[in-house]
Image 1 (cartoon, rainbow, N blue to C red):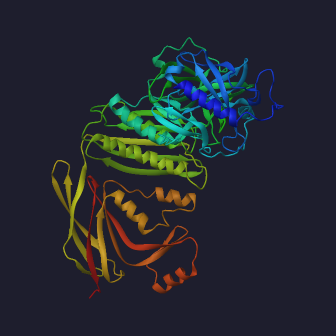
Image 2: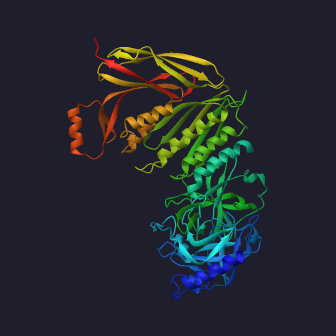
Image 3: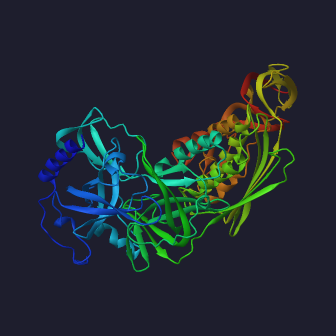
Length: 616
């Protein structure tokens, strides 16, 4: 099967890719580098990568050809067939990205792409001429499409009993492909070694969530212990072509490192990967030396199991053609403190400390998962559990943002998920906003656990009458059903404002999630902030799990202008605004909302219709 792929690609490239003039770029060192114009199908050479430990080892390569202008922006990819070191059986592994490829002992580029739908030893190489500008820390680069245009093959390829008529190259990982008749080269996945998520039973759940969150970046979280689990004190790795290096994404009580391979070193600049890591140009991540424990072959995805070691600089460029870092620099970070009490009987309060990178696509996910790991390090959570927690984000030149909430549910993991999703969602909204680049200097998460299930469903809702006058108080009954069947009745009072319009109205009781969604429908402009201050003001309005939300909606309407609500407007004013066609104006529903404290976290929603009459 592999021979058939090679033969077809050779035929395709011979027809489509090798008819360009043999022009050597003037800036390349002829003694060290070989350009794509000097490559011919069948040329043989070798690559360097670490298979175990810290020493790069050779594997064999044969040039298949060069695919030109893949994304129509003067970008090429060299196709090679790899063999040796068992690669013909394992396929290209995650963590091999950046492995330097040599022909006639001259560097031609970095191993960077593999087939999305086939475990083969065919790989795409990013030419070294396209990577060397990273040594100068380029400020601006051309954006490339997520996927190149399909290239028609002269003969179909058969891979795992599937025929493919086209070949494409993706600039970013696309998740699980649905290839149809198209075979796709995608960037080789970058393994992120994650530790401290608890025993396998719970770690698998967090890893699945983490993998989903990180899928757009190409990072693949891999469960593993700390580097200290293996005796690496005697190794002194150097960042040389073929060596393992890592981007440290979380450090402190845990170290989480994404590993790749060094392609070239130019002065104090280290270049590697051959494709983007996070896909954002503005990046500063600790750069470390690395260690490979073993190759982990898998039918679905082969990867290196490795870890970062000593921080030696900062990765400060993340571009379509690779990443690059400077030796000796120090990266900025967001500090994280997690304080946990009550998770284990008789246990004293525990505090964990971390730092993570400042990056809009990654900061919130790193902090959220670090908090998740702290909560499950003791093991499976008890079935009955309630979490009361506070998240405080500290900023430079801004007041701290403080959010408090309560989480509980049918089992202990629901409580933990409530904390995790709040932390991740809150920080994700801040760090990836559309108004300005804003990162907290530090984040404090305090969690107090109770070994009780404080959780109930809203079973029913009724009112003492369906006709009520302006200014009166409507008495209502909310029935809550606890998980084990116990029922609890709450009597609440719903004040009817004296100014509400006459006629039909809806009274609804709900949990915080439904209340939030209804608020977004009622006042869409308020939930589409136009400044960072409006965004933070929204985040400061907590929708707490231990509250019953009572919402009354009634006739009439208002508008929202630039995020500010103007409810209960006269029809003449509404008509004028509508006919003027002002931009940025959204209509809002007229509602009154108040909250009732609860001793349990509630879920569910019920509503009744009432009629409002004139007061006597």
